[in-house]
Length: 600
Image 1 (cartoon, rainbow, N blue to C red):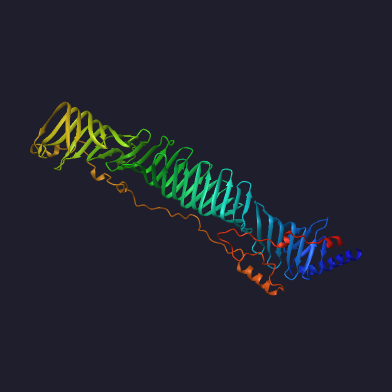
Image 2: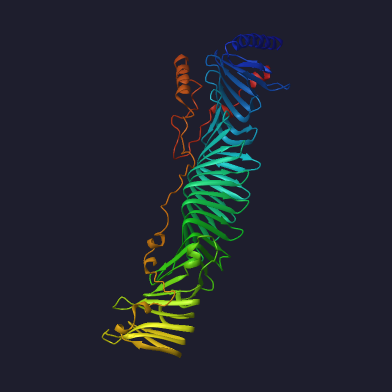
């Protein structure tokens, strides 16, 4: 018994001396072991170490330290296997624990398996198996892992990589970031724990209680809840969907902005607004959009289009209001209009064409251009115009022209103009066509009267308290109510200078006759370049050429058929299927048999 103990101690001293000498050659160094065993059963190239009651085995190599309960050291390959309660520490940056670990002093590649936990200053990674390359300062797993960070929740993925020098994680395949306020799903995510910044590549979603973000390339500040998204990006806010080339998102302010090729869809009110810059304030239920802004009220029979320099949509989903201002225009197949501003209430069906007298110096549109409406060859102008629609049937019901009402239509054959003017105009629609018009107070008319063969009878110029006009196909039936004076004059006896009322302003050349015409006087479109985010750049393989060459060299020098240093390295990183690393058989086998334990 005493001889056995002396042999082991002597062997331990000799081996410690050997390792001390080897340390100069940057070989693995055993700082402490309770018991050292070297016998014929293990082989002359292999030494066993066993912890004592005083402490674990302590292993040192190139600034890294490892502790474990049991270990096997392969001297020829400078390779160690560590068992039970394994812990590896590298300065204050890395703390790795596991049930089992392997480490090569030549390649500086570590492999850990079984309840692996990697802790760095900002986060904690858990997985089943992990590779750690000390030469490149990178950790890698391919059998699912989970990273926990206090302020940003947790991140799980099938494949992951951590770069210590860059303080950067790269997660691949089935990536899920779970935060108390949202869940992020993607297939490629770069995450920087120091700044809590995440970069998404490929189809990605961020889903919260009140919003959903989709993009195929994006950035998200997980600490401050700020995001920037490009490439097929969109944000779903309650009943709104915001799409654009570039989207900015602030969760704390419930705010989003978008640039270039923007589309905001109101799914509840079946309306769309487009443009090239937009701001969405969810808490205020408002959307602001400019740069070729276009609002579309989608209807089964005939959609309504409104264009202006700026559009604002405000109000709860059940009561949306659209405001278009500065050179606003509207178009539908049977009606079009133009005004300084247009105000549309989607709940009541009231659309107002308004002349905002801004009194800017040189503002000719505001002072000289009254709101104008065209319908079936009729032009109506006034200080303001109201259109009333039936929200149930989506058809026009009536219109009102307030102050300085003026209705003009071209004569059916000649070059003259039929004209009615007064203080107020009220029109009625049937099947979206104007069929009845009343001019109220101080009404005047110039009308080219023709028979059923379109032969001109004469020109009627009259004044009356009010005038009623009814449209019956191509015919117009005019009724003068409380006529003051007037008569029908032969064309030859009616002076050309008297054929237009004061204030006559035919603006047929301004009439939008298509959606494209709404933009006819806009300046050329010059969109800003979206610099966006850099495209995804694949990193070099974790098991790079330099590492594989080192392993190949070890294999060529070793006496065994296969080196220990490369036995757990996968031949190919899997792309579609989970590829768990098979643990060595020795992991669950005791290192010390009963006789050896009894001898010690």
